[in-house]
Each structure stands twice: as C-alpha cells, then as structure tokens.
Length: 176
Image (tube, rainbow, N blue to C red; front, side):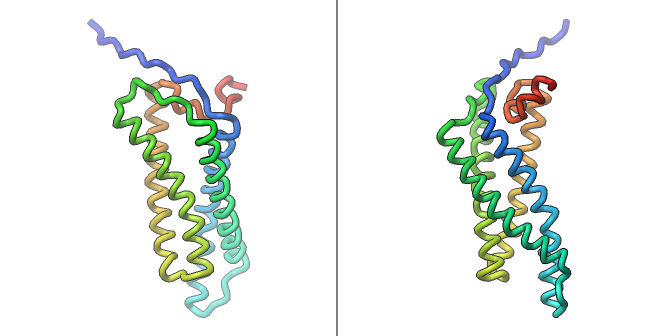
C-alpha cells in the first residue's frame, strides 16, 4: 500500500511585471551593496590610520551610498505598488502561522531595506561612531531575513505549489 501525497493546489496568480522588476532590481542592487561595502571598511580604516584611502575604495563608497538611496526609493515604490495592487492571494493550504510568518518577513524586509539607507546616510554624514554600528546590525538582520525568504522560496519550489514561481519573470515560466 502506498501513501498518497496530499494534493497541493497550485497558486497561479502572479505579481505584476512592475513588482517583479522592482523585486529583482533590488536583489541585484543589494548584491552590489555587499560587494561595495568592503571599500567603505577599507577607506575608514585608512582614514583612522592617517592614510589616504585608495581611489577605488572611495569610488566604491560613492557607489554604496548612492545605490543605497536608490534601493530606498525603489522599496518605497514597491510598497506603494503592493498597497495599490495588493500581493497575490496566499496559498490557503498553508497553516495560518506560515502565512503570518510570510507576511511578517516581507514587511520586515521592507522596513530594513528602508532603514538601511537612512542609517547609512546618518553614518556617513552625521555620526559614524554611533550610527555606523546600527547600520551594520541592520545589514546582519537583512541577511537573516533574506535567508529566511530564500529558504521559504526553496521550500515552495520543492513543494511545487507555484508560490515561488509567481515572482519569476513570465518568460522564464514559459521556457522562452
């Protein structure tokens, strides 16, 4: 006798093209932020040591600052789209605690992605010693939230319920 697997109802409704574009643009920009953050650390260390920071590190510092502001603006736009367009319906086969956790994680991601540019600007232009550690802490919280988000997406892919596929560009879904 074989145990039958419970039938999972696929969720087919997608996010809008704009929501998907903003999501993946922010993902890409956050990757650049991670890469460029080393230049900030090195330029501050050089400054403390009385050395002139390298031009590359100063350039990376500028990239990090301005892309951080861009991420903040894109997240504001993403939130406005989410409020105006709503997110696709949640999979009702999931336990309510999982659905609540997903909602909390999404809004926590938005909050951290909004606070990071604020604390980054504060650290750069107001008080690095006080605000800088808050910025670093928020970065670590972001990594945790992204790990949870990524693990949930992988879980949905393995579950084959269609939830994770809703955020992928439509052409990938159709194999074009």
